[in-house]
Length: 98
Image 1 (cartoon, one colour):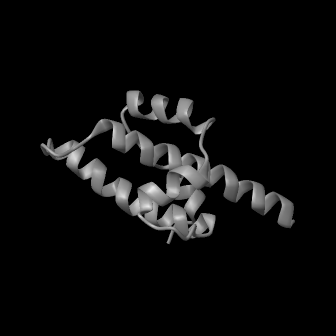
Image 2 (image 1 turned 180 degrees about the horizontal axis):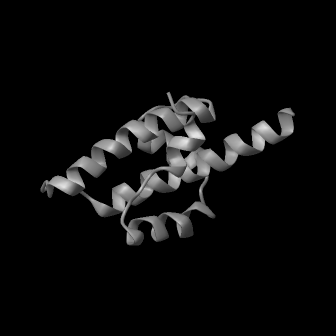
């Protein structure tokens, strides 16, 4: 199984979604985003959050590709922002742990 950072690096999304997520990632605040996106009051550790976010984002991407009516590009970008923000946090934790 691929590690989380490799899975994130291998995500291939349309450039408009990816650019919007990169711009939004600078303002990412996990205390604000995660409870709303994951529908929980308890903030998971970054790795657990990334795994859940990746699963939900994969479903959103399937909806995008299929052209499903309930698909929301804005919501998709929110999940991509959260994935990028959590990945940055996970990298920072790993660097400080060494």
